[in-house]
Structure formats: structure tokens, C-alpha cells
Length: 223
Image 1 (cartoon, helix red, strand yellow):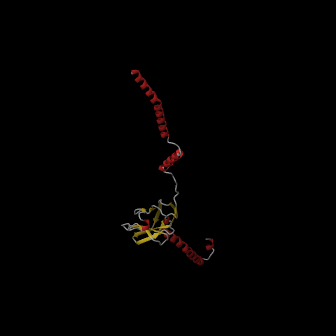
Image 2 (image 1 turned 120 degrees about the vertical axis):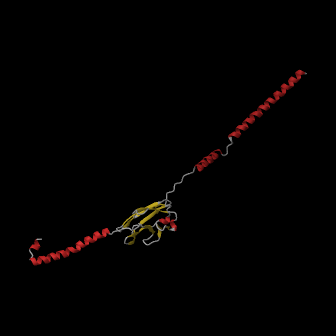
Image 3 (image 1 turned 90 degrees about the vertical axis):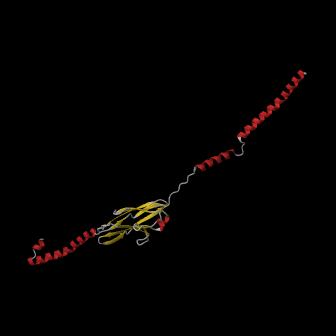
């Protein structure tokens, strides 16, 4: 300001004009940035996720936009995989699911919500790739569509298997062990039976002569 006061009046007017010309681009840039924020739109989803083979995974997503929707709010959520312009694997309307994901995709989302979750069931090794969420809207200015640029990189890991013996196998092992321990030995029940029979036979052998002798003596006395 002191510099302008030292300049003659005619030149001061020219200096003010030059100053305004210099400030105009900056003001315009500020207004443009604000306008871009108001017109911004995007799809948000995690950059990376990891799932276990044969398990399930959920890919959350959300989106925002500046446009006014039509009275009949028509939103569509689509998903692509592998690359940005890759095949569509899911479409909310009309309903569509890629044959590779038959009975394995569930979209937890209803309009007019601006967030949801894509769930993949029974994960396979071939599911390891990038997934992109795409949004279609019917606005008062026409149809608008956009999708996530980076997508979500899904990594599939193999499940850790644990080996456990079933009760039938354990019982079989115990039974086998018992048979192995008694192999080559006589059955205890058979041994006992043989001993009993031996005692009976021995007793019969000893008693029979005595009985015969007693019968003979009795017969002699009667005669």
C-alpha cells in the first residue's frame, strides 16, 4: 500500500488494475476447486482382502455423488473382476451372476442405500483376483455410471488341515492291541473248562472201584 501511495495518481489506477488482473486467476482457481468438490463422485472399497479356501469373504463398498436422482430412484450395482474393463460377474438389475460364481454371490444392498457388501461363498483358488464395484444411477440430468479404479485385490489362502483319529479307529486300535497281547496264549475260559473236566474224570476214576466193592460186599452178606 505504501508503494501505491508513492506512485502518481494516474499510475496508481494502472497499478490497481494490474493487481486485480494478477489476483483474478487465483480467485478463479479457488472457485474451480470448490466446484470440483461439489461435483465429485467415487466408489470406495478396500484395496486388499484375504480369504480362506472353501470359506467366505465380504467386500464392503460405498459411493457418493452430487446429482439429483429421478423421482423413481433407479440404482444399479454391478461387479467386474480381473481388470478394470473385465467381465461382469454380477448385476443387481436385471439379476445376473457369472456362471463361475453360480449360487456363490450375495449382494447385501438395497436402494437408496449408498453402501453395502458383496459376499462370495465357497471360495476357490480361481477366485484370487481383483474385483471392481460399478454404480449406475438415473439422475435428473440423465444416466450416470462410474466404478472403483483400483478395485479390491482378493488373496486366497489354503485352509490348515488337522488330522484326528475317529472313535471307531481308536476302538479298533485298542481291540487289535488286545488281540496282539494275547496272541499265542490259550483262552482262559478254555483252560478253566479243561481243568474242571479233568477233576471230574479223576474223581469218577477213584470213586467207581469203591462203589463196586461196596455193592459186592452187600451182596455177599445177603447170601
